[in-house]
Length: 419
Ligand SMILES: [Zn+2]
Image (cartoon, rainbow, N blue to C red; front, side):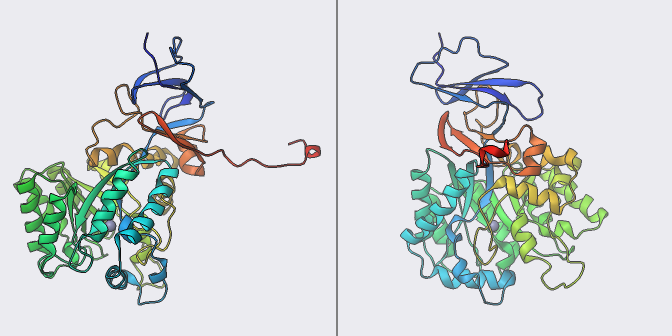
């Protein structure tokens, strides 16, 4: 008889009405059935009563900057805006130590874990100002928190590649030392096209996925996404390239948007919207009719089949002086800012779960038999309520082992109130 290590009883699953039991064996989902009649569970093993609560696959944050999180000290004052944020962090990172980066990164990573994130891609800045200090801290975070989260490390040149001597050599050293993929930021390079070409050359030579910051302004013209699509097609890198922000998509007319969406779909390039940062940094020159500046990724996916995701990006720093690591909150922020109606709420949850899992090419992800038992239990009866109400994440499991538990708040009413 199979010895299950864990059974979650009475779970409500996204898109389904009845309750299910989820059995886990050796860190994988062994069955999802209305009732596990022969649990075969050892006395010292675990049974979790979901009591009708929503169980979802763990949240997947495909774009975070752990290395520069929790820098509120340099988020106050200064000139503000995108250039001001880059300059403030550029000055601060000269003083970074691995211990300092580790401590700030751990604070953000723990928050994300406690909000139900089970997979994350962190970007990390590598250049002559900070060297490999932040990168080495990321490797240590990846190792120490592996019990709760799979951390993928994406090294990138925040302040330019072709104009910043020594940066490429450091990126290559980081890739040799275990970085998972390569990022980029052409808009800070004096020659954006040359940066794009060089990044593709390195990616192809080393068989790496690419994830670039791109088109981060509200001018609908001059989008570099078309260059990215051409390069992805030329190198047969479809399905291995993601671009983040792409706020130009929010400013295009319908014809322009259609051309961009078609190019992205044909080239297999994914788009990640970063609502907290995009709302905070774009349109700052306006005093009325302030634009949202968020790429409509739900439309890209639903109407054009472009792989898309929503992610956290920055937490408590000059780029975004907010953040609790919650992707559920990010999905709600996106839905609210983008006029998404309740019938679109489940898609917004897909944008922080199964779609970024595809973007990150996670092979064992999902609430299905055989997948890794990485899931969360939310204090909500269904997916629409979860997006609308931001319920407590009451527990998360990583490879079938519980990583935390958090009981929802309950009123302490005096007995005579009869509540
Ligand atoms: Zn970013």
